[in-house]
Image 1 (tube, one colour):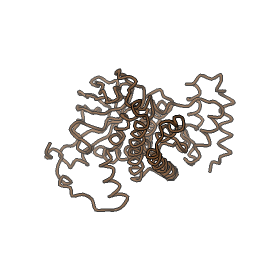
Image 2 (tube, one colour):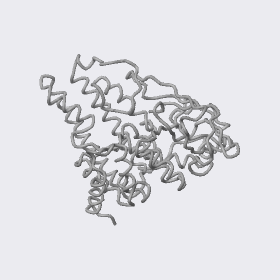
Image 3 (cartoon, rainbow, N blue to C red):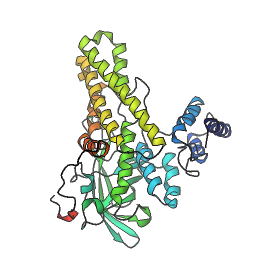
Image 4 (cartoon, rainbow, N blue to C red):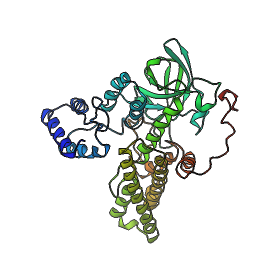
Length: 393
């Protein structure tokens, strides 16, 4: 088994061969991946060393101390947190070799084509159709709320390939080239003024069968891997103590004593305790990840993250009073990545409203927690054995 000392030795060899101060950033990222120091729990040859995931921090700290560049997780977060673990779990060896290296080294940015206007929070109700045509699939439909589609070269895509079976059994998962003919990306301006989200129209887009991920008709099974990793990626982000949205709030509290009241102080302390509890639970969840794939427990962390962000950003607005009602810039812009803590208080407050929708709505996640974590009876479902084509829409 790989030890921390061995990893430190591997990092030292990398730094000696590619000094950060004189090596171009892209060359260093390539060399780090090839040395197996990208995501060390991945297999050898795919950016890893088959090492325990819990030791990743050893590598990261050594490289940070040396001033080495890292990839931009804000820009490629969907690729790192959702596409990569799904491709690793269900992809062919050829897909592993083709996609994982450019994904980690930022040569290719990924987005997620899951949600649809007519499916609401029920992903399995999606209607984007994929029809087999020789060695290709022809895909037609519409996706929505697609973060970063305007910056992406590839997408993870779930489609309907068999409308004659119940909705969960007629889905197939693909890797979609966002530059292919028939793919159109349109901005969706949000309440923040930004167009971080997009709607994507697919008009007879041809996808090679070689870019199918998993078996035909097993798209729901593949998508579950993506969704569980997505919830951990959003809610299980590693923050230091007094970090995240609560950290932004406490920093304002310390720097602006004239704004304090005893009532706000009590509410701040409550949120700080909740933030610390979430930090510890998230740490435990990451330790569980080191031993295997994420489970439904990630839904609970994501719900807690959403509620904490919204409460903390709301309290920040109250703390700032009239100043908190100002907004810096409503200009429509299309950012490179997602930033929950960016800009000023008004932006943070408005952006946090999306936390309870993206990555699975809090209502859906509470059902998952009830049924799959607590073992409570599932809600009655009348569509379980009905063909998708016969469902009311």
